[in-house]
Image: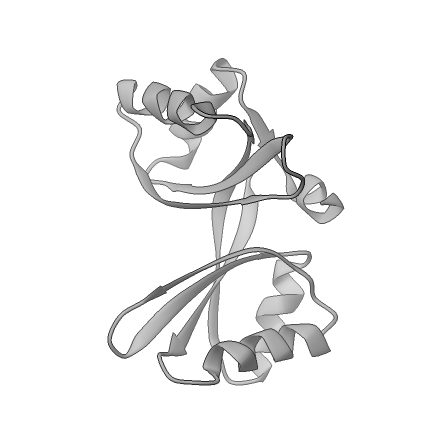
Length: 143
């Protein structure tokens, strides 16, 4: 139950983010979640889209450098401490989170956390033992 995340390397200058989103829009691709981290010259845009293979193809054809990475998408109770408990259990078992970002589709229900782990299989095993809901590609597309 892994989800594919698209990472796009873009120059840190005005208009580049808009170009990426325009290419995806023209390709009929829908963005479910995103995160943008920047450095002085370049940024890494991480996206969960409804079709990562097609998104990579249209972005590459438009001249962008894009890669696909496996991540886990977790449904976390949308309440204080919902994420803290999950991260605490992972830390207690020595599981390292490389990065994460989150979104909520409807307030008061679950928040969705996209996580990249140092050891994704070990993280999945711990999360499943703890009863955490892990989403798959069809769950993401249905959001």
